[in-house]
Image 1 (cartoon, rainbow, N blue to C red):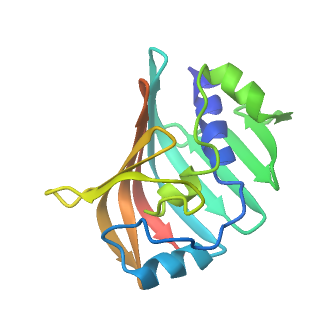
Image 2: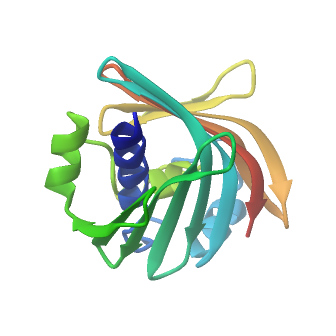
Length: 194
């Protein structure tokens, strides 16, 4: 269980390590062009909430804290009692994994895929958690469902964004779900800091 939790955290962190791309086109239905442009320009943000990962016959529920700046990302996955299960630090594409015992080691994307048994969208999640499609990739099925959930598909991943809130003038989702081939990642954000 602990290995799966750490691998899931690693996967999420590596998603956030790519530099922000300039806005190419507005595939972000339901968000104003100004909000999209401003969100893409944000160099630092932080979210805290809950993380659920299901796949490969296993499931995991934990706490998540994700700190992003222009050079690095830090994801901390904790137990419901507050104990740190693992930390992932990404610095310009280099991934450092720290386990619950405090041991830190380098890990690469291929090793991550081998540990998880599937490839995660390592470059896109940092866009998706902010309610944006990755502007460098094609998008399919952009739309707004009747319940206010935005939905689109990128690289075969179905992305559902819901419960939007206003934070310091930005419109951000509180519920992010991504699904592909039996893998489901859900993040429920309890606090955004921009």
